[in-house]
Image (cartoon, rainbow, N blue to C red; front, side):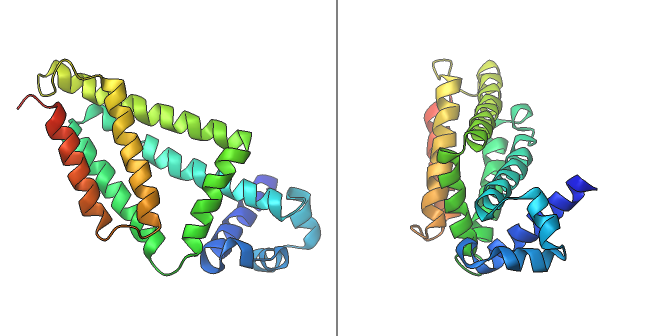
Length: 197
């Protein structure tokens, strides 16, 4: 029951942060919306900073697990890039729907990665797994003769990951019109530069 209460508080807080903005939500609002007493809340969190850090950890872990579950290593690179593009499109739509609150939470998440060892470790592990899945996919495509033998799978996986993440950050800030189309062009350019045809 204790873990369920903590998860309930996190879920309520994330919903409020997304609706109103991280800096505009007070602890009293979270407590009231959760339907718990102050004592029950403070049993799990000592202050808003701890709640925010826990929420970001929970959100990042959930998002990371969803991406790491994708069977990228078992797909052709072309299909893997299409799947990543679809995930990217869904994430950008979510960020750009409605208001800036989700974007604010995303920026706070990036800040927390730098300043919270637990979230930093989780993030490094996520990117390591994601890069490895892409690298395995590329290795299989080399074995099939689709990608040139001189292509380094790990560096190419890093290039794809870096392009995706950087483009995602710029797209979240509304730097690009039609961000999905632009990322598709980037992927197409990378794919053409490494394939044998």
